[in-house]
Length: 385
Ligand SMILES: Cc1cc2nc3c(=O)[nH]c(=O)nc-3n(C[C@H](O)[C@H](O)[C@H](O)COP(=O)(O)OP(=O)(O)OC[C@H]3O[C@@H](n4cnc5c(N)ncnc54)[C@H](O)[C@@H]3O)c2cc1C
Image 1 (cartoon, rainbow, N blue to C red):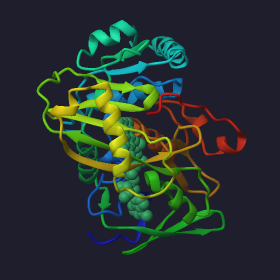
Image 2: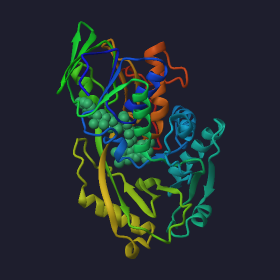
Image 3: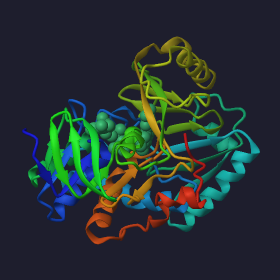
Image 4: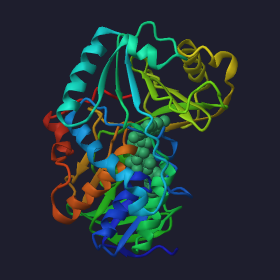
């Protein structure tokens, strides 16, 4: 597709945020929307590299409220968008191995229950009973929500992009934004490797690259890319179909079924910010050893089938940035800090409300504005994996 020379709304980034925003804007009747993605295919940034986990279990009310809107949108996705997204409600089982984590889990469950989310608090024995294949002698508590689970990220992006295109959105791949022209305090145009597009409204949905895009407009946003990686195993017949998404919280070590095997990941707490997306083989070994400790059958049964790394888009309080910036017309929807895939559906809808109506209606996310960092209004999320 030839690059248009003007756009009413220009979205930068074809991951889950950009795709969802494009669809929701078009659904509200906007007819001149352009979405630019630098890669050959949409959804190959953080979205395509993520673990696909979706959950209600968060530690802040605002994240639970985002899940309460976003996860039902994923449940309705096939009916609304016409694309199967393979939502498997296997439940997330978060495990506490020390008193501090257990006490926080207890508070989190009370808060989630108060918002109508049916998360259960489990004892250490109940955790062990649910995971006969795993070694959790040190578990002292757990939390479980059956409606948490996994969804296919590529299907969500592909579904939104093709539904948006049917509504007239021009979604263009291999189109890299290289500069943003600002006149006075207002955006004027976007420069790309394929030409210039005049526009008065830009949505920065560039995920881990959102900070770089903002700099082009002269805006500073505190989002840093941090590498995270995972691997999958070959089929493991011992692992039951209903095996939950297990998280050993103290180690940020997680396991969930992927095909007939497992997907296993662990966060390297010493990872420095950067854009490197190659697998750190040394850390993969640390991850594998930790996984074998928890699930001894992996030592003999599993060989690694595939592995990859991607970038978290981390803010100082692990919450996203929604809304405007000091440059008029430059909007931001980024910084989800490693759990944004699941909130992509509602986030695109929220940015549509903000751009078209000037306010967030579905969930009030006005406290997640850019100014909170300067004004010291941070809201820390504890349940980051
Ligand atoms: C290893 C890993 C595991 C994760 N697991 C989960 C999980 O289980 N559950 C969950 O909810 N979330 C998870 N996440 C987080 C989730 O992937 C992100 O929060 C979410 O995908 C962010 O979506 P996005 O659209 O903002 O970013 P992206 O998907 O990265 O999209 C941004 C797009 O912008 C494009 N772009 C960048 N610069 C330019 C430019 N100059 N011009 C044009 N295009 C540009 C990029 O190519 C990219 O496609 C995980 C992330 C990683 C890395």
